[in-house]
Each structure stands twice: as C-alpha cells, then as structure tokens.
Image (tube, rainbow, N blue to C red; front, side, top):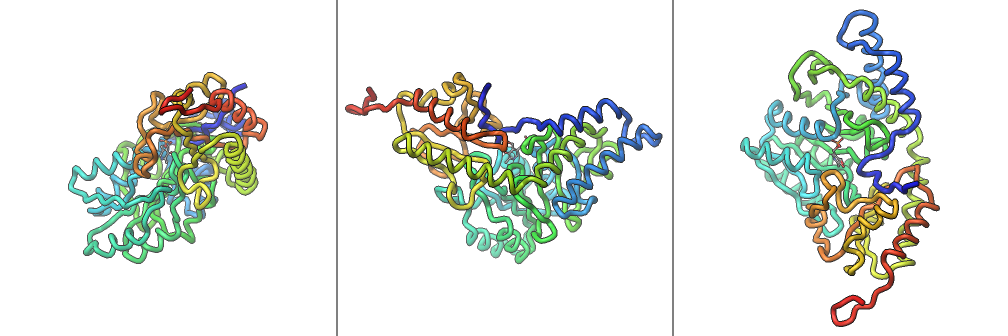
Amino acid sequence: MRIYLDNAATTPLRPEVIEAMTRCMHEHFGNPSSIHADGRTVRAAIETARKTVAKHLHASIGEIFFTSGGTESNNMAIKCAVRDLGVRRIISSPLEHHCVLHSLDNVEQQGVKIDLLNVDGRGRIDYGQLEEMLQSGNGTKTLVSLMHANNEIGTLNDMERISLICEKYGAYYHSDTVQTMAHFPIDVSTIKIHFLSGGAHKFHGPKGCGFIYINHGAMLKPYIDGGSQERNMRGGTENIYGIVGLARAFELACENMEQYRQYIEELRSYFMAQLQENFEDIQFNGDFDGNYLYTVLSVSFPPSSKSELLLLQLDIAGISASGGSACSSGAEAGSHVLQAIGADPGRKTIRFSFSYNNTKAEIDLVINKLREILPLELEVGGKFI
Ligand SMILES: Cc1ncc(COP(=O)(O)O)c(C=O)c1O
C-alpha cells in the first residue's frame, strides 16, 4: 500500500462521492437543457448541487456558477473583471498560482497595470503596502487578487483584513481559495469579497469540475460563450456527474470540517516533531507555526549527497509527496514561490500534504524511510562521506 502525502495536488475521491456520481450515471443521462422529463431531472440535480454550495458559503444560489475547476474560475475572475467591470489595475503577489500569474500577464498586455506586493521570508504579504498602493490609486478601478492559502508553503492571507482594506478604497477583491475551500469556513455574508474559486478535486471530489462565486454587486459576463447554460454564464452542456460529485464532496467536507481539521492538525504537529527529533537542521517553510494551511507542511532538508534524489527515492519507497508545487511538476521545475521567499536553493524542499485518510502509523513509516534514505553524513572538507 502506498502512502499518499500529496493532498494539496489532489485528493482521492471519497466513496460517498463515487456513489453519488455513479448513481447519477446509472439513472440519468438527459441533457439538462432539454425541456422533457429526462432533461428536467438532470437540471434539478444541478440546481440542488448549486443550492448545497451556496448554503455552505452563505451565498445566494444566483452567485454560484460551475466551471471546469480552479484554473478556469481564476482566469474568469481576472479577465472578466477587466473586460466587464472596467478594472485597469490589479494588485496581487508573486506567490500566486500560475493560473493567476499568467492571467495577470495576459491582461497586462491589454494595458492593465499590475502591482505585486512584497512578501517576507515566510510568504506573508505587507498589508500596509496594500493600503498604500490602494490609497495612491487616484480613482483607478482596481482589483485585488490575493490567494487565501499558498499551495506550496501553506501561508494564509488574512481574508477579512484584506476585505476591509478593499472596502475602504472601493476595490474589487478576488481570492484564489482553491486550497482552502471546504477546509476553512468561508462566509460571504460576513466577508465582503467579490470572487472566490473552488476546485472539487482538492476536497475529495472529482477532477475537472469547480465553481466560481461572483458577488451580486460585481456580476460578470460569460467567459465561455455558447448556450444559456449556467444561468447564461457559461456555455456548454454541463459536467453533470462532476457537479453532482462536487456538491456531495463539498457537503461532506463542510459538515465534518472541524473534526477533520483537528485530526489533520495533530498529524501535522506529530510529523513536525518527529522530523525535528530524527534529523539535524530541518527547516519548515512558510508561516508554519503562525497563520498556516493545516493540510500543508513544506520541509527543507539540508544539502547532502542523499537529499538530491529524495523525492524520487520516496516515490520508489511507495511514498507520494511533492517538490514545490505539483500542479506543473513531474520533472521538477524551480519553484517561483520558494524563490520569492528567498529559500536556500541548495536545500531540498519537499511538500507533504495531508488529508483525513492519513494516519500516525503512516507518518512513522515515512520517518523510518527518510532515516534509511538520509543516513547521518559527515561533511569533511566540503565533501560528504
Ligand atoms: C492555489 C491553487 N489555485 C489554482 C489551482 C488550479 O486548480 P485546478 O486544478 O482545479 O484547475 C491549484 C491547483 O493546484 C491551486 O493549488
């Protein structure tokens, strides 16, 4: 049995989700746009799913639109805010996911001014600088796009604080909540935010399905043109099985959130303690003991002849983890996040990320395996022996 510690890349489908999806596959095939009974049944399933998502976010059902996932939702928020709301300036950070950073590159080519905030060594943004930037905006319509939690190092941004600053200066606020959706409570009736993104596969739902929350006060036009699906917001026959699975996964994750959070927090603390006990000179990245995403632990191992192939050796030993961000990895590319926080490029960084499926026994096995791979080494004259 492999040990899966890459839950920030994607999570396994939970059995209840598979059950809901396969039941729907067996029983329903109609096109939700058809007006006959076969179509209406499927349409009803989509609207029930929308209601479920809206309920847990305290949004209205007219503010939730299903998409193909986090990437599409983030592209839509940024590009359509420019196209439809007259945004001419975007304030963001160098730690955003590539789907946000590349969308920013895209709108920059259309003349939108992009300002990136400074981040410190833990990946924390400078809230004072955000306020100063907004203050100096001279009435330019501005969008603030700042992720809730970073997918590589887990640093959390304070959504409420950002929302208050944005409100004070009349800026739109978008947050890439792909890593925190259904892992942290998000209540749009108390936090003033205009756009949120979610991807089902980060909370034990299916891949290729997500949603965007669009506040009534900042309604956009379609990003994908076509028919009148998704209340005229996204053309194309809906991914009905994905939507049904997303809603079931979202419901279960939200209903059990506190219980899972406590369990995973404990597992993460145990792993940190074991790493510190068993290895010299371990470093944790991000705001690991401050404001952090509890499902992620980014660990930097000291330079050594053995650590170079650590990720590969873990994989061979049956342990799945990730070097930096898994979204565009495979072959390990340098991480823009680790670079932006000034991490030592000589050290080997592994992101371990957890779910309620993991156990302490698995953590013990990972520690034992790491001890086999990384035996104590002596550095003599700059060479390891
Ligand atoms: C922070 C963040 N944003 C966006 C995405 C993209 O989401 P999706 O895979 O649903 O397109 C990811 C995926 O890893 C992510 O971690």
